[in-house]
Image (tube, rainbow, N blue to C red; front, side, top):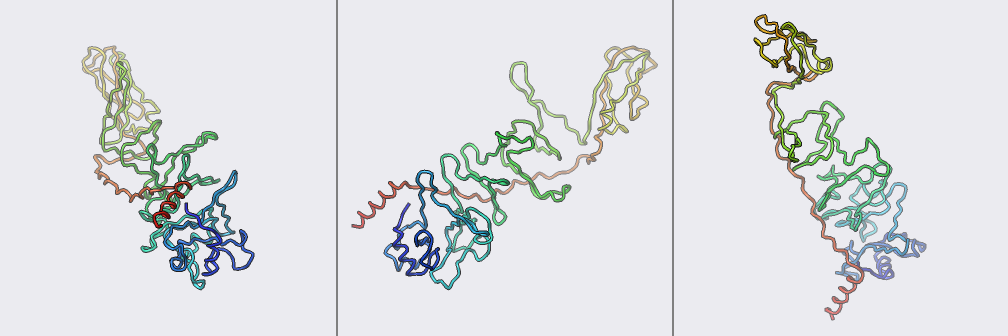
Length: 376
């Protein structure tokens, strides 16, 4: 990164009376003014350094020291970084412009506030295809947020995207704390507006493309599938084969069992657990005899069971199976209810990954030497 002698900058600061320190002789950092020369077009006329790319501030820590430490006041952020706008102006009569409001320069508790915007378009802070508020680049973690409540907050209420992640393996990766696992913890949590639980607004999550669930999937609402529903069953040859669900125009449960005729008749009780979830006021019974008979029929259907007889007054003693089908309790469904296939959602405008080129001091110094030789 480029660097400039602080005494030269201090001289310009005193000349133009634009700086970030106080006006007295006891400024912090031994009277060194701290400001960014790039922000003021007037310096292009007053400074021999006009036209150069000069960093507003560059801090390099040694040993255990920190590169830059910013400590905010009671209601101010520690560090404010702005790209594409002006935080101060050469004329001291004009107040500093930080989007003319309390956010985010005043009355906002934050360690670091980063703003990126197009000054010509005056767009909302942090929104734009080339305006990046904060860029973190590292071999391990580009940005690390540590908090007692929320590590990182992405607010896209004034734009489109709160948090966007790029990754060759995972764009966004979240997991529970392995060192202190919480049985109710979630790797990734999304919520719609559920102020009215019966009528939520928005989507808790939306995926465009295949989704793999490695583990159990629990759905507390309705599940609508526009394709097929199948189970992958293990075959004796070592492969897995798909078996598809049998669909019904109504929500129904079924139960199976076996019984035996005695002198041509048998009483069958419906399982109480089945009757607790299925409406046994009306149900269907399907019979299959396991032997020669005159045929079977059902009589005396009730909520608790039914009676099976052999036709023609037969007195056979044989086993048979039965299948009971009844509508589901507590949930009303419409027969062949019409539904509309959801439209393909419009993907939000994606922020292009910034082309970051962080040069080493050696590389930057070599570049400046080449430019100097070319001018000579």
